[in-house]
Image (tube, rainbow over all chains, first blue to last red; front, side):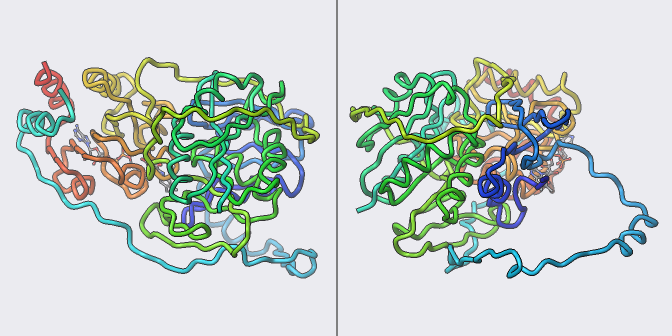
Length: 137
Length: 313
Ligand SMILES: Cc1cc2nc3c(=O)[nH]c(=O)nc-3n(C[C@H](O)[C@H](O)[C@H](O)COP(=O)(O)OP(=O)(O)OC[C@H]3O[C@@H](n4cnc5c(N)ncnc54)[C@H](O)[C@@H]3O)c2cc1C
């Protein structure tokens, strides 16, 4: 199962991991390289410390990071062909899943704004300002 | 009263400061705070965790399988401990916490609150969405176990000086062998860690090459700063992935952030909004980065970085 690592709207970064747990299968999140060899995938993951490589037995859930690949440009004929591809709709009820309303969103607000600062004319003025604030020595 | 369990993040026998930041979030919830260390050899990390102010107890689970932080291996152990009467389970919103926490939440059958930036009540939290362009308040049902990740840039690291007792646990759970650690390629440096550094110098696409990106390292070393990069600089191979700052990279809160040759896309800005002072150097006077910079300097970085270094003496 391939998924993205996080949605660009809610940024939650959970779906792949939860799916893997519910399915009781391995997960390889934040993938930047995937090599499949027989029943095993060797996945390079972008982690805070660098690049981690793990091996997972298939089937597994893999979530992609930004540098996994370059999405190919979709040519017009392919867009036309896509229209003819079958799309199957699965009713939630048919899956025997109980949808739950676990988290309620109660407020939306704008983030605190950073105030606009000042422009300095040269490096000397910048360094003087940073020194006076004790940010550099 | 809340009973809060925090999963310690550690590497090579040392505790990550993200854990002490999570403790600050737990203090905002209020209650008993316990830290869970899962490791092959837990004592050094447990001792560090026991010293964090506010921690009431450190729990250790020592197993050879815990030598590396594999979510599939850790999650059932964490779920077993968290399910034994805790009201909250917190992990830092680092790649470690993001990988592990949702897997635990699913095992426990609860939703996850990602990137907690503010605690409004024991079941109510604020978190950013749309790359930080909106803040939502989310509420979990009364009595539901909260699994959350803590937006580490929103919380300072809790101080040291504590001396919590350490207790060894051995939860009886079968661990999968379907996930195996192969290796970790780390960009080992003597420089400060990007996520905890007081000062950060970041370079963007304008650096033009990995060789020229060395200019950023040079300036950073001069002021004892960590090095960061925009996604464009990482994608182009000028800097390694672990230096990426922003929505899909690291969210940081240094005292001083210097952005050089970075335009200021929202995805980048969301990673630095909590910085104390932001400095931008860019040749385009209309670059969006100047909208949030405390100090802006317009000019060619290839001329200004050497000048900067010289001015520092
Ligand atoms: C889903 C998604 C997630 C993303 N996540 C991230 C993320 O986490 N982090 C991130 O950074 N980006 C992220 N991005 C990418 C982001 O949108 C921008 O493309 C990226 O930040 C641009 O990087 P940059 O500022 O280095 O490059 P550019 O936007 O190309 O800016 C280069 C700047 O350098 C200036 N410049 C050029 N030459 C010089 C010179 N000689 N001297 C001084 N200044 C000069 C230019 O005026 C320009 O402002 C994401 C995008 C998407 C769609």
